[in-house]
Length: 168
Image (cartoon, rainbow, N blue to C red; front, side, top):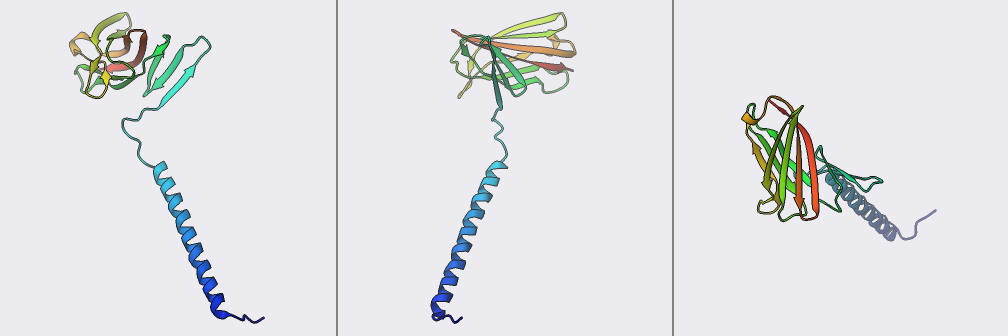
């Protein structure tokens, strides 16, 4: 079999090779960009949230190992940004971000066995978000595991979060 027009045949082969090379490059770029976005480091402010609504209309929300449970019609999400000691024999720092509020009150209940300590503060504006913040003096607590429960209320909205903290 003889090829009658070698020039056109070579040109068609050249075009096919260039086309396949471009197609492979585009596919490679797409796959690489997809893998890069999948492997990107998560934003330190990103919070994983799990929502479970059970039959009696209570909503359980889990955020950063902080359990939040409310029974009101309006749920306040509380994210703890700091909860514990920065150093041994230091104060207990309670720092949160509260969604969907512009004021209200914060109540902190710390319990260790039969010992219970209660503290209050107002929801404060922190420049770009609202928060409940409190510093519990080390002298108020004994060493051991304390359960810290944070309750936030504004109008008909409420939310709570709790976590166990080891005091050293």
